[in-house]
Figure 1: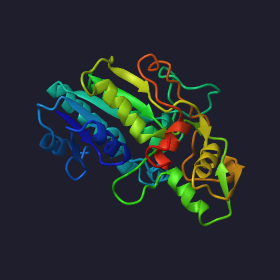
Figure 2: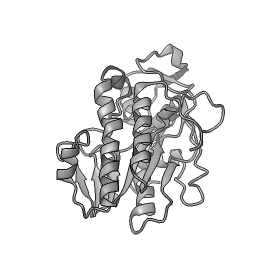
Figure 3: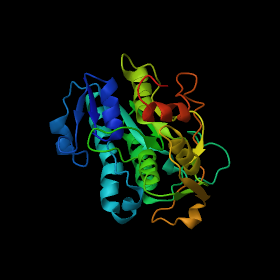
Figure 4: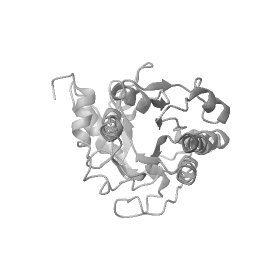
Length: 281
């Protein structure tokens, strides 16, 4: 049996592909406590997909205890459970484990150096998983957008389009670069790799959409798709938009390790699939 832990954007996307999986919310499986995991999981479960995370980057700076419990200790508990029960673990991590100072895309072998507490807690989670479970897979993903079932989507794309209906001018950061990735594409890739049988070596992988963008270019692409929005977007630097948590400027991830096996479509094609009616792309 496959178990998906977390009912957020990626957890819900995975549930659309792993149709026979059990999907557990935090109230059903609180990964911060071993007791909850032992109650929620069955020793016969063979694949655990951990999408649970504290992802509010700025809030992590203020709530470090909670961020550490969910992003670092939680993965350790799951890794120990999987090791004990001979199950495989898919753990989702982030590009924010890097400081963004490198001039080329980051590979899996590049040394992490997080510059905010969210990235730090996720890095500790990676290290805990690797040390505690020899049948684990870690996938670093980034800049996730996509639907949710609980209320209106709240990703960057939807927020920009909402703001575009209310304002004539917007300013968006242009010096942070990464790969906007569609949650359904990430989920589809995971299903291709693990849905029927596991044919991938254990280890660390980068998984993201093809192509790179800044938040500014993503915003521009978002408002250009139908129905279109007559709003002017001005690019600004990160320095002009201070936030509690520092962000890496270069979040480009190399997928050379995974490319021979699977590649995701370009982020612009994924964006159109997300925003346009079915059958129009």
